[in-house]
Image (cartoon, rainbow, N blue to C red):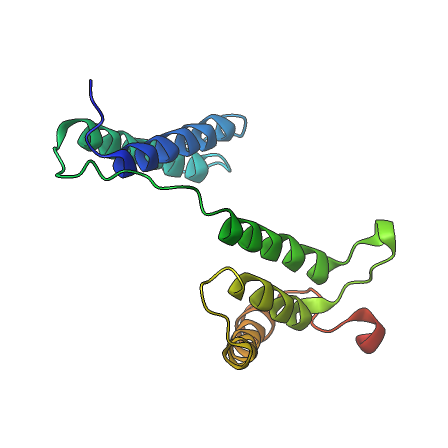
Length: 162
């Protein structure tokens, strides 16, 4: 069978594999019933839905003809590295890294650091726009997570807030 759309084939394959992995992982928890859902019910359901969606996309990639085959280009390594690095940086800045003596920097610093690193993944980088975006994201995150949801995690660096 010939692949008629590479983009759809690989995205469908990714959805199917990730969905199946989540569904399989959820089976180690108590599933429960529809009326009394256990902790594994929701991840199992989402995993199955994602796997089914991936299977439909895979089927479409093998059946529906596309004019150019929608070839997949080279992997964009630079954006991938910056985005993964930004996510790692967020976790490190938010909670600190005690093994090397780095204290928790808190939510605001973590958002600023992550926004600056992740914005480098794009084709154009404007420092002023990135700082404005960081300020807006910090204010909105503070309002949502600290004020409204009342979550307990550091907002400011530990050496400032104590």
